[in-house]
Image: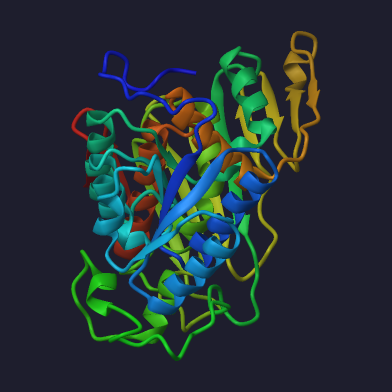
Length: 401
């Protein structure tokens, strides 16, 4: 695996026996989930790690996370901050995990990197493409580990697929497909409970939560269920589909997408501003096309498949199966790779911490993560504006087709 920024002035990695000291920005459901997992990884001897700093603009969430971190780490002093800048000012932190809402990802990540911290950023990488391009530059300009938490890339089947594609086993790439579909009786993300205590004032710094976005009157639904609203989230595309696109982008090892078009619909959950059904078509300069489907109203998706001219890869379950095309059956040997089941979220956290120690580039690296954001942003714009979009990787610019 390549090292970070060849030729750069390196960062001294932590000693092998040194405990990694982590801070978490955003202590809602995802941030607290990460907190519990870090404590378990340390408790079970899988990594030497402590969570020593927490930041959130919501007092009840911050106090709950502080209690968990303090009770779960005997003898460890844990600090909490309402202003994330105070967390980043600490010189004893090796890394920062960002689990804030999408509209804060870019600023939190860039500020953390500039403060000398390695970063694990929850998906999507950013809310908009222009933010991703700015963050990409910051990552390239600093010798820090930056990883987006699209954990499915840790599943062995994608590593086998990448190996087979690189070896030429399936021939020229033709097209691929994937999906992330699930169903809900009450509407996607409505299962996030609304805490009536959380209102602007002592319990919540609403202006700080809005942050880089325009300041709007407080709306408890937007605060608690922001993924349902198009100004604050890309919905299905950025929250769900990135999990399936990221490992495929990584395995295919193609350049930046050149054209994206998408359609979104409001079919059942008419109260949700973001779409409850989406379909994407992504194309690359070499002609490869990827079909991506997402739904929060029907759980039956499409099978994960990569088609080559000579063979097809089937990526169902934990496995990777190479099936020769009929006309190449005498020339291409079938492959049946039985992948082991892994807890990919824990593997993703462990991978980040390993890279912090070795200074290796993480999976996905910043280029793959940015390529995925090109697809996310152009698809989102296509759905709302009704046009296809093209992307020029030389200029790093998107244009309406």
